[in-house]
Length: 123
Image (tube, rainbow, N blue to C red; front, side, top):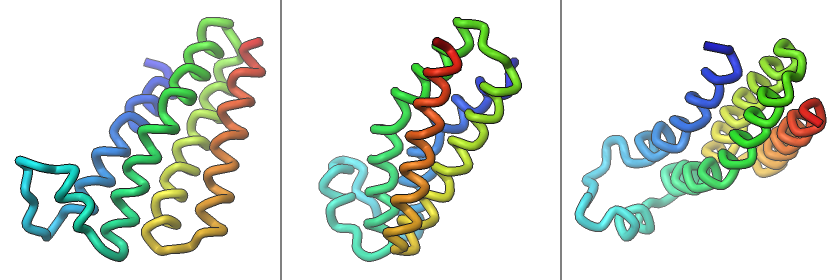
């Protein structure tokens, strides 16, 4: 399997990792998980917000990787961009949890640049 596909899998799992971090060590009410998430405070709340943003970022990333792959773009470029995207998303999560808004925004913007680049190399 191509490296970029592994990055798709990792990017798909990131939201679940983040919600696990947010809820670890808390008494969770799984009968109403959305209400339970609203009760989180501080860094746990920010981890939950990062979790939600990962769901927003994933579809464009997945589409971009698939477009680049289907267009037979250079595999090393696809792999690099996919890897950088995932690293930036991890950085985004860490910055979000640490309440570093400027760094978080920079990581978010870098991820968008990777998505655009993946679409462009597939054009």
